[in-house]
Length: 213
Image 1 (spheres, one colour):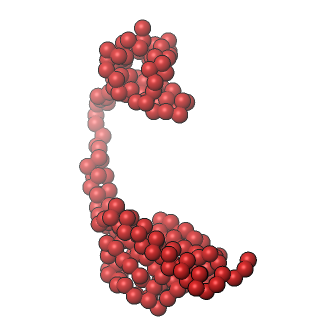
Image 2 (tube, rainbow, N blue to C red; image 1 turned 180 degrees about the vertical axis):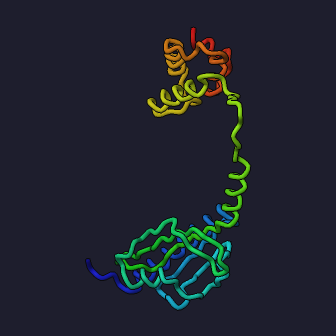
Image 3 (cartoon, rainbow, N blue to C red; image 1 turned 90 degrees about the horizontal axis):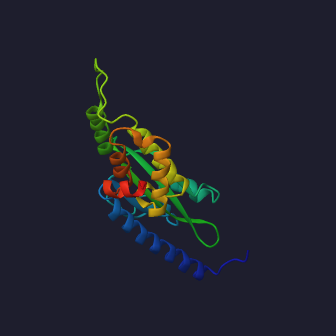
């Protein structure tokens, strides 16, 4: 591969990093305030942090490259994408990180886009949800769902999946064929069966009854 003239290569690298900064801003705005987005200029490892959005780590622009950045600088065969690896902020907060290396036209790493998600809030929410959804054993078995309701929903889902669709997006002809199939299979013999099917399909009971005819 012929060597690219230095001035052209530098212009190419600058353009890559400028576009990367635009991507970083968009990601930061989308995932604020839980995700820190950092642009690293690996051409200057001692001052690699070029931009930092939603600052969660306490770092600043012109801070040096991390160990991962130095590893990329040393090895152009280093993995370009490292996704969802465990990390930790300086104050001990757990984080989930993804790092994407950017190569220039000659295959050298010149930049990286890194995203660091603060897991503290999400883990608190997870614990709260687990506590809220926890149930105790009951001396009496009780079900608020009519008998075979889940079987009806499952059969509808299977039918829709076989058509690469979802229950709510079935065409009228497909829906009519499904309702006939449910009737022949005995799924509609249980109490409120048509209402259950209609609800899962996102249609009215009147439409469901018409589909059966």
